Image 1 (spheres, rainbow, N blue to C red):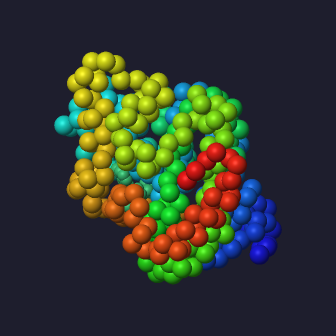
Image 2: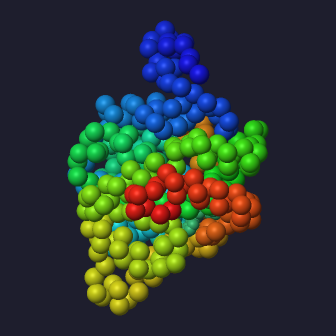
Image 3: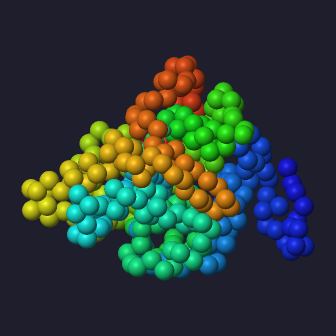
Length: 316
Ligand code: A3P
């Protein structure tokens, strides 16, 4: 569906030229092969010309609902471990979403906030790699990517959408169908994963590719690997003192979801998008999809993803 090419101010509106499709809580626009919420697409376009990357930036990239909150907490805890004690840590008082800003989803609409952060900056994004602003793509900074079983990500997304947009609840079967067609926020899901996967193989020092399921199984091992990749390796004394285990405990689903600060209150994002802080903590389990999808539908979704990823070496 094409719209008018000018906005209400009579100026050229690049969004209005993009294909749009309805089905999720708001129509999404197709920008460079990815389905995006219009306001995020507009910001991504703007960042191309305005964002100034720094070589020591640390980027945390995810598809939505693949462990963003968790990787924000882990990375913040690892890189700041010399500044804070675990018993009186900022993560006990602030939501992980508050300690690491999103590039294209500024809190309270403040686009200049990230410019004021001291280096090294921790920055999160759901942007596909191919939509990174040139300065970010070429500055040589490190990126951590977390992916997840698409079935669990879809179930998690469906719950989240229905929670933050109560006025337009989405039928689960319709959600599965749209997702399977590649139509989801920041989708196609598999293309998003694949871009980061390929780059992580080509440039392992630039991109660390992690899976939610692996991290859940062996969190200490992955925290140690993450710290080394970020340039904040644990020394022998820290390992002997159990600091990686402390990081894992502090950032665990059970710990974070039980905190008052994460149970009550709201986060306000750009364009008056309001989310309850608790919405970022639901089950925190691997394989929760079985409670929402039949084995048959699950297998169908697996087949679609396997087909899309055939020959790439990536298994989701
Ligand atoms: P579920 O809905 O399956 O429970 P994101 O942070 O990218 O929005 O992803 C949210 C998903 O991560 C939710 O999955 C949420 O429960 C889970 N999650 C949040 N914090 C977590 C943590 N500390 N450890 C593991 N999973 C976590």
